[in-house]
Image 1 (cartoon, rainbow, N blue to C red):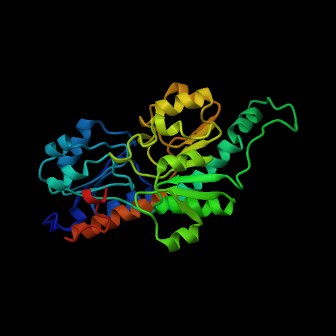
Image 2: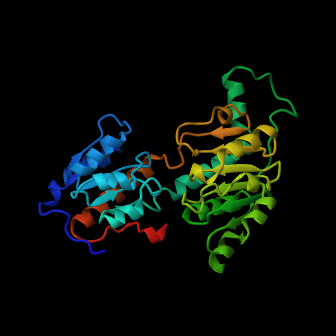
Image 3: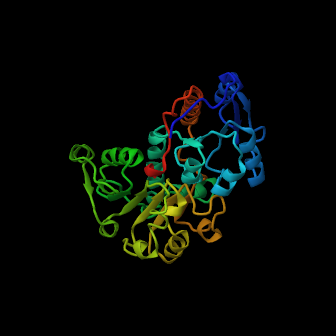
Length: 336
């Protein structure tokens, strides 16, 4: 689809509407470059408010909390030409519907790779070494002193780590796992080049089922697509060892959360570290109550450096698009 100038007015008058608060330095730069409307209170917009913003903007800058479907795009009107998503994941946006309506979508890939991989290792350590339990005991003044058999966790060295999704983040996790002495296995839509496999010392499994049965830890690093929805369903979770640990920093929809909760409660799976959830911020109370689970509020990419770099990518995509060229991080339906 050819890209032409989005407006006849100067770039500085391009109307950009941002749905959530961004780092101050990014908001200031956007306000310098464009006619920018910022979010004053960081409140999640309602459906009607999102549609109103889409009607008024040349460029909308949403985040993962803003779900925009085909019906909303039908209501947007002719002005909106670019949705410059603040984030890499675009499963909250109907990319196909946008393409059909001449609305381009860009994202911010590669920015939070290292930050998210760090969080994967943090969750693995937190679950396997029972760090939250120890913290709660200390903060609650319940610690009675050291004992040879108290707070026993497991050593990471020698454990079999399975990585589901071996893109940028999966490979960054593999590099960290090697340092800790873990054995890396992976399942991916396409096998990696042999040189990359050798560099990561990673073993490819064509069969996800076979890999799940052999690993001690599974790290979910796959995007949410129709093909990955409940990829870890009840049947596949039952293939795992009772001593296994599930880590998810990708998208909650990849796991059947109800099945995972049941198995954690009955001891069929030893533990889980979750930074994302199937139903957003609505956490299953039974999952929240489990002592063998570490839950985080979507913190995988939450570093100052990462958030600023995400904003810089958004600005760059808007500037290039305003000059009549495709945004560098254009998202196409065929990429999903």
